Image (cartoon, rainbow, N blue to C red; front, side, top):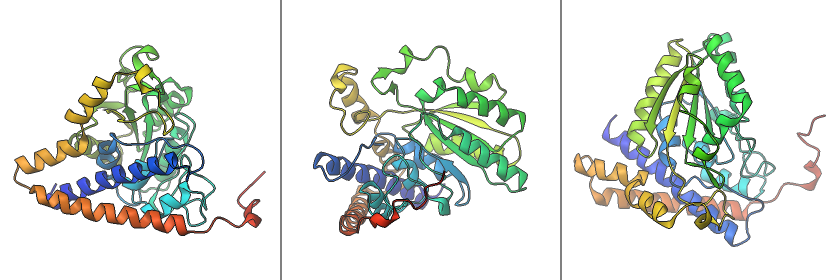
Length: 319
């Protein structure tokens, strides 16, 4: 990776962070309908994985999917528009926070059902293989997804059919409000390995580690060596969703402060770049200024955008 590529990753992680800060403000000021599940703290996973992909590769996302969408190339203006229910949004303002898709960039959609998009990603990988292409598919899901039967059904088929799909488990420690160790037995990596799937654990707070592991998995898939499973150990800095004000009941303040001080993916990358003399502190300040201006302009675009015409209520509805 070149210096410019690392700085691009930093800017992309920062873009996700700033975008989500604005989403939180939109919700608390009652300007946004519905809920949103913020990705702050987990930025290294989405960016590290998506930077290992080509533009024509596929991803599927989750209810906590803004970071995945942005990392795969979505624009902040259309993302904000979708969250606000506006016509220029990626789904015409009808999908909202948990159902954004961007098929031009291979994003087959976020899904509010836990592990619900694992079948879609596996199907996309099957399609790619049958078409004779070397495209790969990535399925993002949280650690709660390992409790869903569909994940095991599709991992079984992916292993049997040697499909080019990568299952990315983002273990942020909590299934909503419960520590995952209270709901999930055994070693998580033993589950994909039971199907003969290549599985690797990675520090999800370090974009360098994520990118290296994702690059290995993608290369295997392109060579026709089948599926992979990445267990990314990460942490969400805020609540389960924007309305979650009860974090003190299920995790400690000390834990939150420790992760923010010691395990912030943005700080981990900047400290390394400075230590390696690949970037100076003032470069990060300039990048932040540019990103904040871009995100602010995208928000203003969305706030001024029109709502969908009520006459479209039946459009794209099938039975």
